Image 1: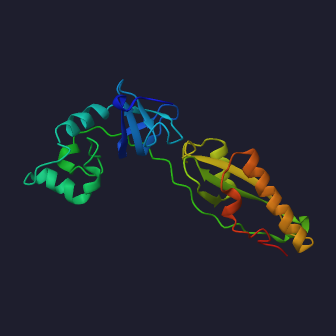
Image 2: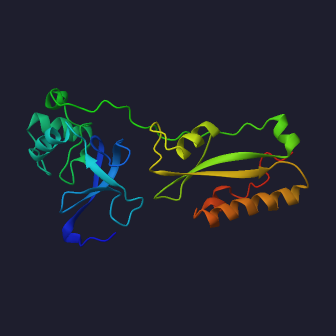
Image 3: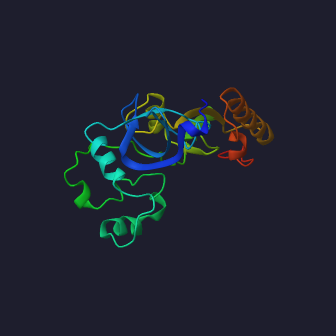
Length: 224
């Protein structure tokens, strides 16, 4: 996706109550950019994947826009409302916006806000290997890769299924679910080589740069 610099505003940021994903209708929090046509997309710039189309939250966006348009990018000290927001998080008083997170309640008490529960951030889960797994000599491990960063996280089978099924309770738009087989028993050197090969193949076939390095050479983890 390419836009001339004059046609986009980049590095904008929202802490919620402003934008949502067009497809899932889930609230969006994080960096986004805006085009001259009034379209919104996730990511700091068009070159910051995943670039997903966003839209204003109905029944809320008009009031939000009206409020933020009244506030200067460089507010003048002395205004108690601006001072309160400025003191709470100076970094957000940029890019022509102030998030609902910063605005005092007197500004938003009459605003209609979407009360839909936001999707949860992924949780680290350390696998528990059972006696039956050791009898089989292998078990399954589950991970997530953040879409626009070389970051991996091991998760539970339950959470893995939510991401695969694009459950509304999780941020499936931002993470790629990964499942790999993990060898537990056998000759130690061979176990190391097989697990290393499994991870390398997943990295290559699923376009997961950095996945092999994530394990830091611990390819005999849980070995017995």
